[in-house]
Length: 166
Image (cartoon, rainbow, N blue to C red; front, side, top):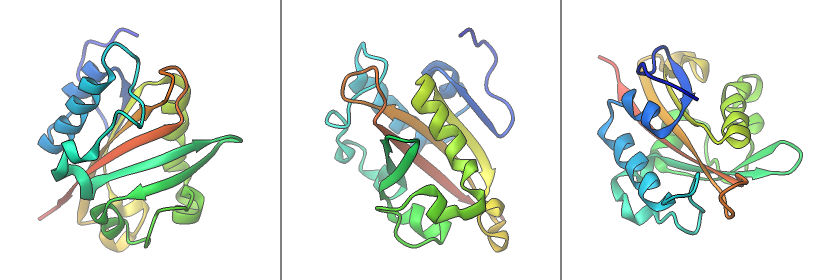
């Protein structure tokens, strides 16, 4: 995959170098750099390599999604800021369909593509697709693959940076 221009629009998939060019959030850059550091020469690191305490400022904004058979994705955990801003209660143990109903595909499409292609994902958007009364919030999110053998994705690591628009 050859990519030369920085990401444009509200979402894109690509290599770490490509995604990095689209990041303006210091928080997301720190998470991406840590992910890159621990993966070494593999396509992506394992969950066991990922120590969230190495990036403590990101903890409230992180989420982990288990990638299960039969195209099932289940939230393992979500930080307090993620749960607060989405206004959907506790994420742990639930699926995107349970959290977002008819809007679940907005989450599932990138989850599937990161799982299948190992590309990284970047989206910048507002939260009107979740709650129309929260249009004053925007966010940038990255989704990164994790997997025990470096070839099969069995978990997704996501990090949001939420912004209150003035």
